[in-house]
Length: 429
Image 1 (cartoon, helix red, strand yellow):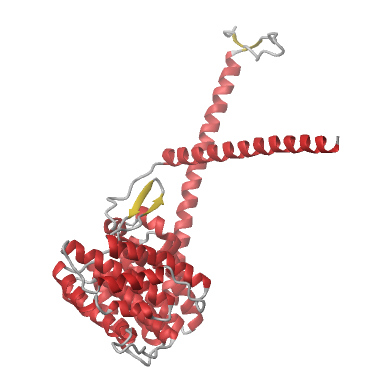
Image 2: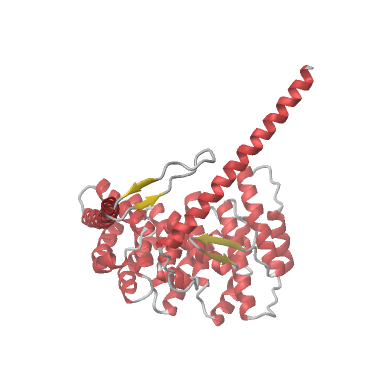
């Protein structure tokens, strides 16, 4: 006979239950059952891998369709294709796929910029930035930018071109120059193109204001922000030249009627002060007191003719700008992504972060985790590899916290209800 093995059932009501014997045959059945479930789990994992691979193939097929559709005769189809590519590049890392097709995509962008209308040109300009962000600094993005830079500059400087397209080119030219320009002298030349635009919004020395419509003011604002972005990569000697030339004139933009222009001007002034003080700690500015008075007025603005939201936004920004000019201070901010965090601790970092976030939007945290180029810009080191166990632990700890908070909330609610019941009873009595 086979050897008998005994299993003890759980205790019930303080007494031991019946002892059930089972044989080697039963044990072998259990082993087979265990092996079968293990095999099922393995095949399930294989199926999941195959499903993921199929999903990846489907995704790449869609991207290929989008690329082909950017040269479609229908403007609506081209627009949809550009938007599809923008969303994909903003939310995923596609370096290998894009690298092989970069010149095809570049040709499509060039075509859309030259032959498309306003909205299509805007989408193409944004896609150019995302393409450079995906490729990072290097020969590949330089090739892309050499093709597109002349087109950007032509549209930007053409007063008869669509104003939305000019606004988009002002922003995209700034970021693409930051990522892909290989000659610092060309960076300075591009900055001069931006200067030729936003200086038209300066209040004149006699106090008269230039007649500029809101759309053109937005163009000048975009040009100023791109100019400020490129300031962050200028040499120390060039920062001195810029400060000498523009620091006395930039405060004139603070009197602009448009809140976005006032804020852009304030942040640019704070950035320039930060940069010039890094180059020359003893830097002394003649117009310091009038500037601080003007900044203080904007930080405490109570003008009844301005919208409440505009005033609230403006006051918040100018409190920080005033601290920057007076004390060299910066209100730091912590960005959390995955298991990491990054501190925005300077106006240089803030301008750079805001510029990238404008294009990748909600995908910024993902790019901070996985995009080697963006991690390099913010000195975050190589991407961290997080295994599935660590991710599971993170999720479980979050779940535990959620369950604990839910239980605590339920307990508090019960206690309060009891207390309320007692108060009702006392009142009725």
